[in-house]
Length: 302
Image: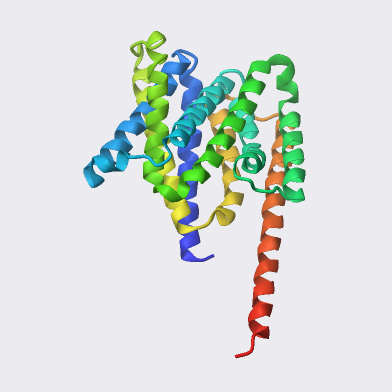
């Protein structure tokens, strides 16, 4: 494995671990603290941290946003995704909620077709069907007992997928840190409208520690992911994203004494298979294109 890939995977694992830690902490604090206020702090802290860094290094000009309408939609879809996912965390075991989130990469295919004009391949539709089957398997016990959690987890995956597609529309117009600031700032502003009605001062030491930590974990997690993708492409890193399920399983056992049952494990395997299927087909296509180009070069007279 090339050194750059090893560095990228190291950053990726750090980001995954931070996100899984944030989710585990969010599940814990949601038992005692209002949801919307907790999510507001999760976005306010990164806004201040990333915004402060950008002001110190670039001045205030960085705040100018190309295509502000899309930037606003990015922030709104991201914050709705978080609200839905943390709602799911309050109704589902940690690993079940994390499992459902991995249907997101296949949902991206639908939004990319609708918003970016991309034509999904048959491979993508097969993977989408397989991944959705995996979600149904994983949540089959939960649908009867925690329907709100199942619906919220699926809604979170859908909104996050929309956020990713919208990000792709503006990715070439600003660097990753600026895009990260805009998404967090818009989410914080949107929740400022409603969070004061439910917010309260933390009452116990754990709340004082966890609530600001949610934003720190989120900001550092995104920073690590930015570093990871600066050293390797998405196709290289995609298979390692599923490590997040293992970290979520570990936290579920360590903090909540909850291990995935047979249905959840089977659903995880099916969703993993759908993602790896797309990755494998994509690499086959890339190899075929590279081979065709090599043939063209060899056939070109000097």
